[in-house]
Image 1 (tube, one colour):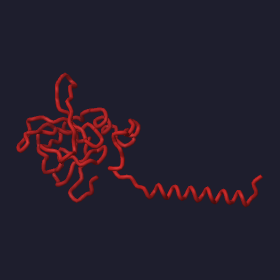
Image 2 (tube, rainbow, N blue to C red; image 1 turned 120 degrees about the vertical axis):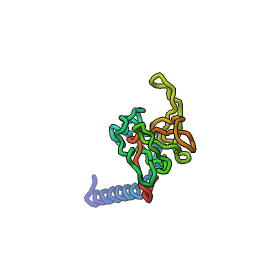
Image 3 (cartoon, helix red, strand yellow; image 1 turned 60 degrees about the vertical axis):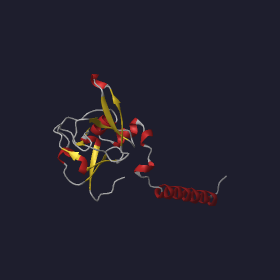
Image 4 (cartoon, rainbow, N blue to C red; image 1 turned 135 degrees about the horizontal axis):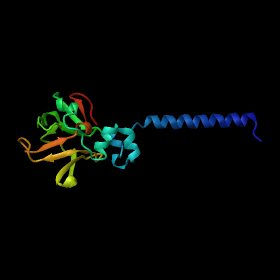
Length: 168
């Protein structure tokens, strides 16, 4: 049989464990680099992204041409992945391609990956974020100097961080 003293002691011990555990969790904040984005479940991605972002980044969709506010973005800064905040393109490499999608002639070092895309009865080179593998768009060989490349990106797959803002 448990008396009041034993019950009170057990309650205090339980409260101490709960508080210690919660403080321990709060002390270990996670950053974008701590998350293994490649292991997130489909449900996790649906919670993290808007339906439009999810459709492009996770399901390889394409936004309608001319709909992205990033087409008009002219400030100095960095374009980052909307899925994981990975730095993708410097604003200095953005150019007006006339396609209706934000276009760049060069990504930042180690920012992206590519693979062959044979969908829609054609062969293209898909561009994805190196950190989370989210679909960004395609790269074509009709861009300006100095690279001759046009990274045609879905604006919904990216966010813009003005110069001076912290990026992950």
